[in-house]
Amino acid sequence: MNVWKIASRWSDTGTKASSILDLFRKYGIVFVGTNKATGRVKNEVKVGDIIAISDGKKIVSVGKVIGEPIVITHFEFQEEDKNRFHYEDWVIGFKVEIYNLNQDEIFETKFGAFHSMGKFSERVKKLFQSKTSDSSFSIDSYTYTVLNNQTNAKSLLQNDIKYLIPVYQRPYSWNEAEIETFINDIFFSFWGNEKNTEPEPMFIGTMQLSEKKYNNKTSFYQEVIDGQQRITTITLLLKFLAMQYPAHTTLQNLQFDWLLTDVNRGQQYKNLQAVLIDNEIDSPLNKYAQNYNHIAEFFKHNTNNEENDVKVEFDENKFIDFVFNSLYFVVIETKAGLSKTLKIFNTINTAGLDLNNTDIFKIRLYEYLSLKGDNKEIFESIDKLYEKIANNNSQIGKQFTDMNQILSIYKFYLISKHNLNNALWRMGTGTFFEQLFDTLLNIKEWDGFANLKGISNLLKIETIDKIICQVSPRCTIPFKAIA
Image (cartoon, rainbow, N blue to C red; front, top):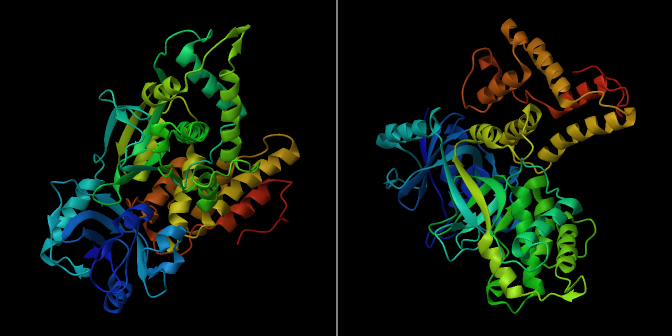
């Protein structure tokens, strides 16, 4: 196991280098771009090696290599991020499981852009082990408001933070009924049924965020593990208020770039930006635009100044202040790896829809397939497997099969094809794939799976697709034996 240092400053000239540390952390990919360094990366860096990432002279993150070095153009980046470095085939990158260091763990080194860590190797290894031990996770909780300047509560719209909906989340899905309930509840808390009571604080639920991932010395982002529907709808409400009352000082100062999404590998991001940044609110095929207009409709209904023939005055300044300062929610911040974070989510989530074994399989299959290049079509291809099952059941007219059954068959297929230990036949499907992915992703090597690590393209979307078609009589693909 080698220990390497990777620098996160990028420059065409070698001077005035700008940090791309946020891109390393955002995509879980590190890369280098000098001829001498790229040659060493291709020939010497191996899966399982440990990485120390520097920002200037300081080592600020550690990680483990989980993907073979390949040219950077095999990975998918958002367009605005490509402009910050050379997105060209002479730059070499690889996937890394990255952990940020605390302030007291950061240390200085004078090694170059890419270098063996030498005498610092053991120190880096110990830091990595401390981050990945079974007990290495923490949970913090805070009370948040939207934009609070009056109490000690934290606020959602801090100037130095962005929120990212990660790729494995379901798409934004609230419909007209949820929007109506949400807006009506806000107005009920604001002035009651008769529109004549004083505002009362409103609790709008719990959100789970990942640990802070720093973009630079002054800003960071957090992934939204749970709470996508609420944070997105609040953002759309603020956008509506900003367009409805453009003269309001606080609304004038709002910048709508704090919410990002990687769901559907770019399409949801474009749809969200179309509404928040480009003010395109008339698209009937854009869920964000649809809900923006639902908010406008229900807002107009609630502020109708005629109520039982009695004129009711609506004070927009008082309402905006209420939205900013009196909508309360609890944020749970989890500092752990992805798999453990999702387990924590399943444990604490009581209001939403739990992630079950088939949801987690989708996420981890994406992790595995994206090691060899972050192709934007991978997650969509996985999603189509689930869609095919739903479509087949719809044609049959009943729940004929589900992904649990498909994965159970896939488990037996893998055991037979690769002559795995007979004890695995009795293992539950969820546990089987959890231990399989732990082994393939170099998180933890489990007995019975070690000999699978060297097999390239072990798990294939095409194989699962064929199993679905063998099980369902209404599959659109003719029966074919599994290769």
